[in-house]
Amino acid sequence: MAWTNQPNQTVLTELILMGITDQPELQAPFFGLFLIIYVISVMGNLGMIILTNVDSRLQTPMYFFLRHLAFIDLGYSTAVGPKMLVNIITDQNTIPYIWCATQLAFFILFIISELFILSAMAYDRYVAICHPLLYTVVMSQKVCWVMVAVPYVYSAFLSLIITIRIFMSSFCDNNVIRHFYCDNLPLLTLLCSSTRDIELIILIFSAFNLVSSLLIVLVSYTLILLAILRMNSAEGRHKAFSTCGSHLTVVVILYATLFFMYVQPKSSHSFDTDKIASVFYTLIIPMLNPMIYSLRNKEVKGALHRIWKNLHKLPM
Image (cartoon, rainbow, N blue to C red; front, side):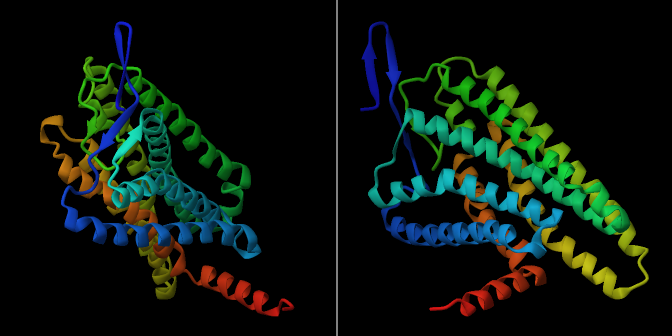
């Protein structure tokens, strides 16, 4: 039951997600595809978290940030993926009211954290390439923890503000969310009360988060590029470019989709187009990040090889 009548008020108990597609013949292929993507994402990100914890040679700031990036990717893909897969296979697209609020809160928390962790990684690469002799001093353990803790606290605060503001508002009789998960923009269309202040909060903070984090990335990589061009060693330039190339690839994909989603007039929004864009940053990017950042990395391959050899040495 979606609605419960009480004296003088109507209480919403569940919402309906429209899902990825309303075409029955596409349900099975989508389920298989997204299940594979999600399993690869979970295995890759969990593997990165474990590997960077157990291998002593990966106890550096770069892998510290990679570990938290993997945790964040695992977090927001899990906030969306399992429920989406269940809805596809069971054809039951309902989601309890409190679960919807929880999903929105965790998704906002992780997606904002990812932006600033990517910025922290860009700054880490700037210090490593431009000031290698000061790297261990500048990127101390305390500094690294601050660069991770601040985004988490800020993201949690903003997530609670948006989620509480939306779910404390009055919902209309229409409880169908035109999306495959509970996102703030589709939820706003279901509210009967004025959404002007919520839209303003989302627009201002979305623009601030995207622009400020991207600015850090751009400034860091501009300084990195200048430092690389001054290098005399071709091998050094190649190594620096290869380190930065993977990070920039993911940054471009993530920021492009988020700018497309959130920094545009409401009148230009198409929820069908938004769903396609959402698939990239909720499912595809969390799967790609461990591959792009880590599986092509010689140090990670070396760590995997050492663990494999140690496992074979264990008595059967």
